[in-house]
Image 1 (cartoon, helix red, strand yellow):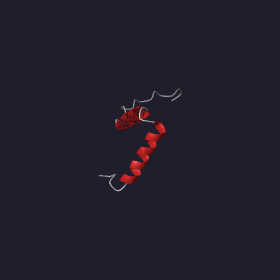
Image 2: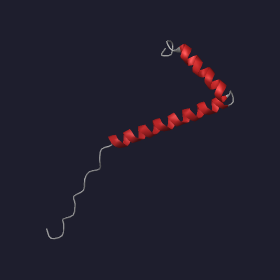
Image 3: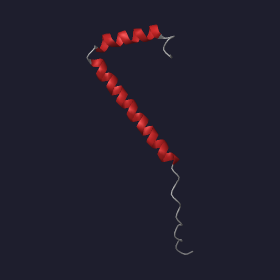
Image 4: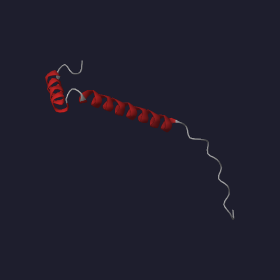
Length: 67
């Protein structure tokens, strides 16, 4: 349980967020943050897969004029 040692701080942050944003706005913000994280993870996975793909076999360049 990673939050056990920081439970009082976590409770204070949650209460402050509730006071500042209100109970109607918090679920919307949580969903937006979750969607952003999911999109970022998908983009990173796509970038890593594209980077790990082997390059296409190189084609021979046509000879230059005069050679």
